[in-house]
Length: 398
Image 1: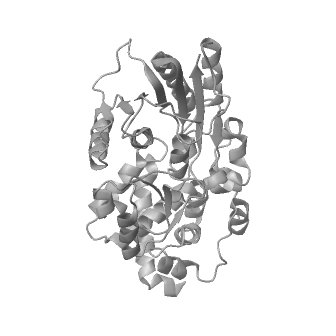
Image 2 (image 1 turned 45 degrees about the vertical axis):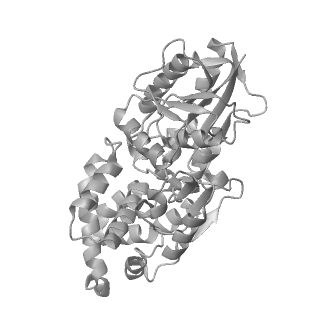
Image 3 (image 1 turned 90 degrees about the vertical axis):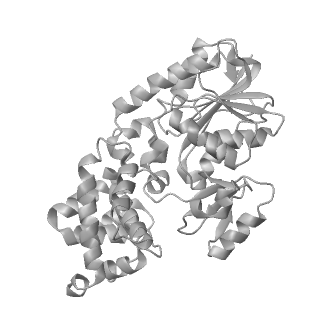
């Protein structure tokens, strides 16, 4: 222990605890905590890029295992640092720190239960108890384990000629692994600032979770023609949809957040996609589309591995409020589906209250819509393909 206290890792441990103490009061009430964390790290001019990667990983690890770290911190600061180091991912930025703090500890096991047993902690604390009713799979292995691990980094190739992209990644020493079922999806097996690459500046790819990419490939054949992306946000799925439709199709992008649409416009321009039109207002009542995508605002429970703070600031009331908005969005935008057209409802939630329940209620109230037989509603659990969690329901208007 004395050796650790005299090493650079000791100073790094104290910095980590100070950063964690600054974040801790905001965990239960700030859904934009990642932005707060990013700004906090950016303000520290003494940090180099490796420092920022180290502290980001430690802080996200602490947030992911918050009840365990709080309990350790109540007993010993050193125990809290050592536990966080042991639970953190092994990366070039964390390896030296982990070795100093946990050199005599065993390798970190894969399951939450095994980790809890070694630490003397309660495994069940890592998922809010109330969520078991919302998604029973989330509180048992393998999804319980996956939801409490670091999310992978996936990109979607946005060019017919990926050679320049692959060459630049190879020059940087970044290994990649293609998805077995979606060739345009690549997992980046490295700590990489992808936004600083020439490939990104030329729109050759977008960062997008594999689960998000798979949604549009799980709804059956896409009708061509005009589509409305009713809740486009910054446009990850808008860009993907526009590319899938090709030059003979068009996507109208709508969102109430103007700054998100501005970002979408920049991304579309970078990707050289001319078949996206950004709507300054909601479509008129008589506007009909061959397809309408409602990627609805939700609780984000499917993204808990990527945004672990959401576990601690999401409540049943949060989900009830999201469900009310989702019902309204479905009712409002379903009327824009042309007869015979397709309505696609999607969320990044694992709660049935935001997913199957919403679709069931909508179908009961709208008998002119029906599930698409060849592509039934589907929940993509994180353990299935090492992704975030998603739900998608394609509905055909009669």
